[in-house]
Structures are given as C-alpha cells and as structure tokens.
Length: 95
Image (cartoon, rainbow, N blue to C red; front, side):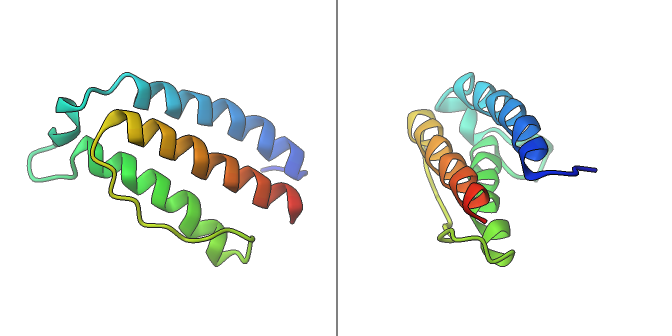
C-alpha cells in the first residue's frame, strides 16, 4: 500500500519504463498476433493499456481527457503511450 503519492509515482515510473520497453520491442506484424487463441491481439492489448491510463484517472476525477486509441503501428503506439503516460502523471501531480 502506498502512503504518499510520491511513493506511487516512484514505482509507477519504473513500471511505465518496463511497459514502454515491451512496446518498443513489438513489431508491426506482431500487433495482429493473439496472446491466446480467440483472445485480444497484442495491438489491442497495447491500445487497451493506453485507454485505461485515461479511463481510470478520469473516473477518479483527475483532470484527464478519456481516450479510446486505435493505433495500428508500433511507432504510433510508443508515441501514444508516452503522451498518455505523461498526461496521467501530470494529472496525478496536480491532484
């Protein structure tokens, strides 16, 4: 459990770097691959992670615009993740 927002942010930044590292190692062709038969594709999972980074803070009344990305290539996913992650941290820091 976190006692301070700064404690959460410290852990968040490490986890976010790990997520970004995974996204950077995807290929455009891998985005259509399902993790399990009939399940979400890697591209859909990446978009879902970004969607959640806006949806959940929005529901917690943090100042952040809820988005539903549908990015189709790794370069856009990496760029989009950096933006929503930065917006999330800015919203959290101003709360």
